[in-house]
Length: 370
Image 1 (spheres, rainbow, N blue to C red):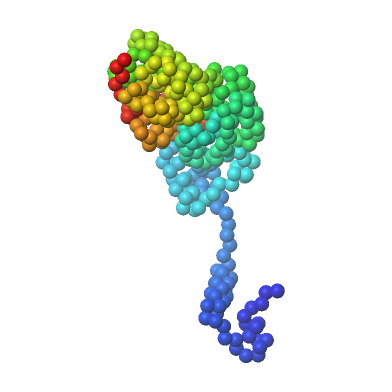
Image 2 (spheres, rainbow, N blue to C red; image 1 turned 90 degrees about the vertical axis):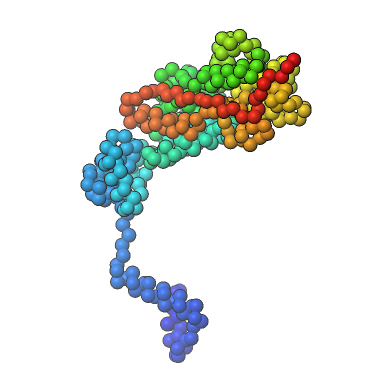
């Protein structure tokens, strides 16, 4: 039962003196109710028709402008989005799904979220998806190729398209996955499936050229997973560049693409007699550095190290890691662009290759004299 202060006072037959704070709260509540009753406030959700009317366009044009915006003139897109912001418009995904047959979601599958390379890709992808009014569902395979296809089948029921980053599946499985749902690959090429890759061969060329200039003639490469397309491309680049330069290449591995993989490879690297080593990724390079330090091996005085990816930690160690930098966030954004084209049946470049560049830091130096 709701008891009001005036009722209590009347039951006592005399005015009830309330504490100041309670009396003030009651007056504010009572006054607010009377104010709302006088104004007869009615909250109504803003619809796409309201936005279209405010922007002076049709409802269908307003929908396109608030989506990917690719088929709308820039000035119209800006006018519609400004109107939506001023009106406080929030799209109803369920209603949009009923009218368009779309969920407003896209999926992303990565091999290992614990690897600092992949969160940067996710960040770029989410930023671009948000601009197109899409949400991103992320799934982690934990470096297990057998999980990838089952994740594609599960996610395809909940999303409009999927991006797979560094997939380990073979080409036949990827072609089957592309039948299940619109599919884009990051850091992998497979047949005619749209993809975004980095020029790994040129990245390795820059790394080897840097080491040759420092006087290194026997260089090691610590391999990542054999199922990794990027690993195969980097190894291909190392073989091509060292052969053309007359440099001896020592191939070591494969190892887990993690810090522990680099630690496990370190003793083999030292036993091989190389004066410089390139690791499949920065995590492995950091593992090498850790083990070398534990053994009292001077870096770069005794041996030089180059990683690949340019994760945040690579610049925080001593010595800071020389690395082949990859455009991680740009890769994620480009993947969403290709997926949007694919979902809208628009023509465009089915493949994009982004540049890599060498960042020279403190882990490389002149070759040690033998």
